[in-house]
Length: 485
Ligand SMILES: *[C@@H]1O[C@H](CO)[C@@H](O)[C@H](O)[C@H]1NC(C)=O
Image 1 (cartoon, helix red, strand yellow):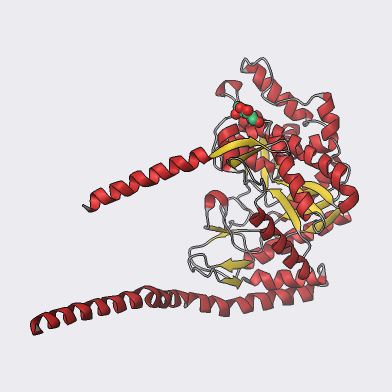
Image 2: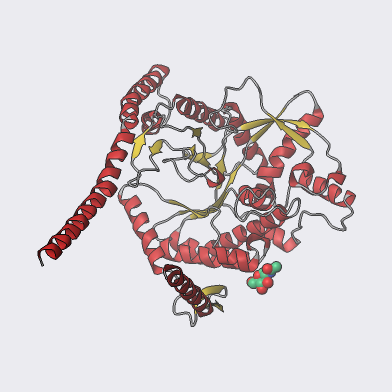
């Protein structure tokens, strides 16, 4: 009987699904792009979403926090992926522009800093080459180049939209944020290693920055990918090309350059035979190494190598005409099973990297802003919640998600309020106070499993026992009544 009932329920819900599906369809909007939803479409904009961001922006401004909005941090609507292959399809340029224009219209009165894409390299390579990230495609040697091509076009279109429609009114800026490791030649007396290290950065940072600042892909990318493609018997290069109109349309479409940076690799030349098949990684003809003398990292990939930061910033200055730079991501993660608030290594990292940034500024690099990555522990893509970047520890298992300051909070607070390093003794003092304060909170947190256990008792055990009691008394009462009658 129960089985039959469940079966009926299942059939019902399947029918409901089908009905909902047929209610939804694609419709062209008056903005020129497509809308997926109920037909006929009554509105194309999710007003609740707009309200959410309006509230967020307003609260930030009330608290004197300048909002810098990233329009795309790897979050494509699923429908655009399924229907059109997402960034493999040039039509994304129009949809993205549509969406960006709406954001400018709704939030541009209060938001003056716009980042179109955050780390498009990750979207291209991890989304379409290795498939580690969404949408998980493994289109080795082709997918990443195509995705990047469309994102570059989308970025420049959005910049032109802002420039034409909104700049006069809102007086803001539109840029992009590119994240890269620095590549240092293994042997600085070996010309092949020097060139390989340059290729490493060009295939990552230059891939996006060069079209935007200099009007085309880096020469070295065109050469290497072109050559490998020919050796693989392809008529044209796997790296798409821009027409001359596109080149001049794309060139100069950054009001500032966002730079994300975490770590460095040593690079040596290595020739991969073209017969191995197309691949972004072998197109570069190089191998990445780490120095065994570097301190053991907290997360397996993130070695602290502060001097690489200064070199990267100088690379940016010389290759792209000393643009205005905002450091958008720089920080350190950890992998821990239990809470560890005394993050001495993060303090060392922030100290080392901000100090090298300061040296770069003295070299003449035009750094105008710095953001530590990140404020709180958060969802770290394919690593889930296991890799923690936050200055604040978040207890994800607790439904209230309580936050606890790590030692680095105290240190970073001092650093930004002093806007630099006043003197060595002062910095040592911050450091000491920071690490002292964390141990008490650490102890509190260690006692926390008991608290969550107590919560479970009150939320589950107590109501269950009460219900059972009432049930048993009802049965007893029934038996008693029967006996009497
Ligand atoms: C690209 O997107 C358009 C809609 O703008 C669609 O008609 C076309 O089929 C898509 N191409 C692929 C390969 O999905």
